[in-house]
Image 1 (cartoon, helix red, strand yellow):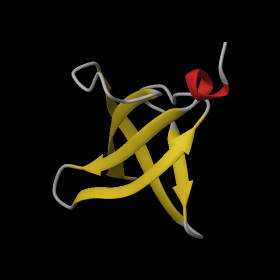
Image 2 (cartoon, rainbow, N blue to C red):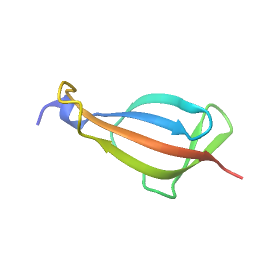
Image 3 (tube, helix red, strand yellow):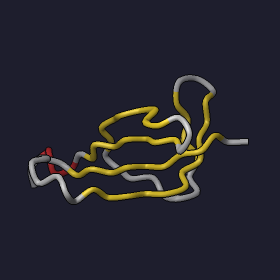
Image 4 (cartoon, rainbow, N blue to C red):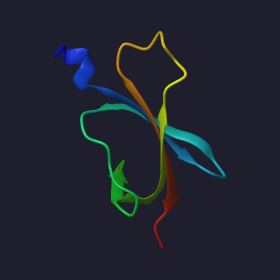
Length: 70
């Protein structure tokens, strides 16, 4: 397996704010997981959408919907 096959290009998308972060990750979070970005900014994963309509991509693509943690 190539190294590119292990990489997931993830877009972390907030429903009100749009794409907040773009990162290469190696493991997909699960719905319900809490994520921390930039210090003490926490988000909860509410939806995962695997992207299969980009055949030119050399790695997996994942859109991750996140909401602010209360």
